[in-house]
Length: 211
Length: 211
DNA sequence: ATCCGACACTAAACGGGAATCACCCAAACG
DNA sequence: CGTTTGGGTGATTCCCGTTTAGTGTCGGAT
Image (cartoon, rainbow over all chains, first blue to last red; front, top):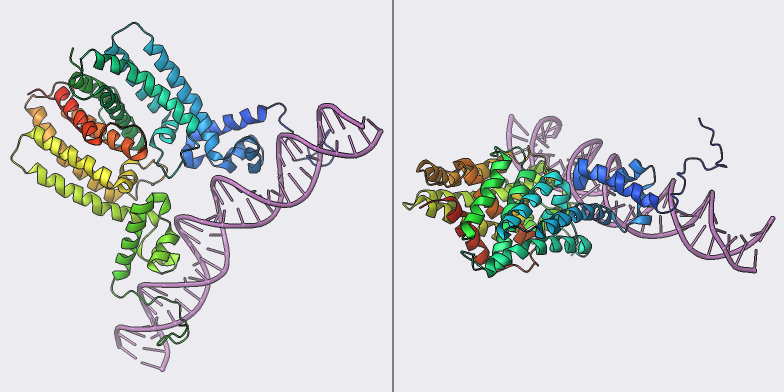
């Protein structure tokens, strides 16, 4: 077992990751840890250990820790964007599209709490803002897809108060608030999640949109 | 300058804070830094330097860093609670009381962004939950004051959907979401804050409460 | 065949965080 | 006078993200 068959004399070293598959290994390991233990728990050293490589090696493939986790998050948010685009193209009422998108948004947040926190709850301390560029752009495109139908509704004169802009932002914020609280305070006496989502959506849409 | 008049031979040492005023000094210095630079920026060492004392000294008066910052936050939240109690006793319609409380809540968050983030956005990583005991209890009492008038409304059969519990949680969450986003993403193209708050409140109340 | 440069990788170190340790001094009390 | 005691300290521990300097290996060009 201590015999290294074809390795001359430096044994413990992990063979070079041919092609760029090492990068993928790192992302996979990082994702597992990040999902399980969150931003603070996903240490550079822990990720490196999981891959079986020195911590310095990660810097061969990524600028810094945030780039790793943001790249993971990009993946997840890309899926959310795809869902939004899909919904945007369905031939149904604008209000129905809005509702579906917000439901998908909240489900995404609850399914990917750590990613959600990283991207949407990151205090300005934690991530230095320029790094987020790509991720932020994805988030923007999600929001753009979402605000499309809202502006349809506004253009049709069906908005009871506020502009299309403020309505879109308020709807987003309300859903964000709900999932953010559910994620950060999971032990509170919450009403059933389905009911909270339903009351949020029906309440706000009924309050903002005339039919 | 190098001569210490009455200090025999150990010069640089700061005289003992008689009574318990050293504790107050620490809290004051910590608050200033915390407000200016947030949770991560308020380092034990920085606080100690500001007081003119070694970092170890802080541990004489506080169990750990979180206890210092949470104690500061308790103060702020105590004020919010006082406001809520005051509003709760006014002889006006329950819906009006709800509206006033939520407005006060959002204003509080925007005026004390770092405290707000520490208490209401703290990821479960950051603060270990038991430490929060006192602060959490204050927050609970705020919520209790707030859910009082909501249950009045529910008891009067004026709720369009959901129970009193879910309505209270949804209203809170919507306001939380708005201020949380405004705080963490201050550079976005937000509609004017006053309008966002107005649309959130009027939209949700109109959607949830029948008159 | 041999050299060479590029590359993936490593061990060790740095600076800075929170927290702890083993002391130390001055005043208060007897 | 001790002696106790409690606020104070410098050095240390441990972990973090990141950097530095060096090392082994591979793919060509000579």
